[in-house]
Length: 120
Ligand code: SF4
Ligand code: SF4
Image (cartoon, rainbow, N blue to C red; front, side, top):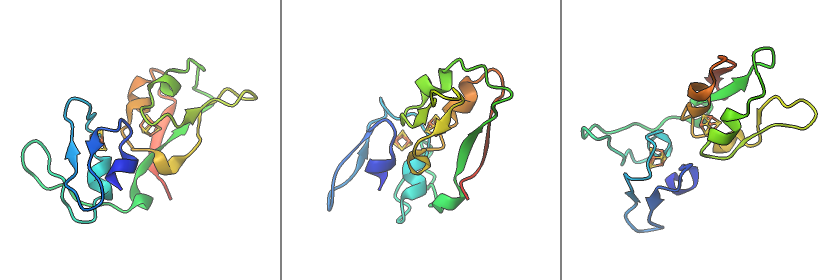
């Protein structure tokens, strides 16, 4: 599960094998820890990170009235799941299940057009 949710493919491993995070690629989103049912992910201080149901994950919402259509969130998303429909140009998530809740899109938006709320 961590392999599939990691937006930057920083995790190696496979079924029955130890999974390893490459710190050079990790962006610290914490998604791998939130999907891990066995609480096997620790932070840099040795603290065990806890599993969190996907329905409680925060996902972005795009406010068309504030959006300047600059496209920075679209370019920044490490999961590649933000698109801009030709008809409206307002960003939207193509697959919210793949959102790592890294908040990068929110941080890059200087118009505060992106807010977060639980997925459901
Ligand atoms: S914290 Fe995020 S970027 Fe880093 S390994 Fe886990 S899922 Fe990948
Ligand atoms: S929080 Fe934003 S930038 Fe991060 S994966 Fe989700 S949509 Fe992409």
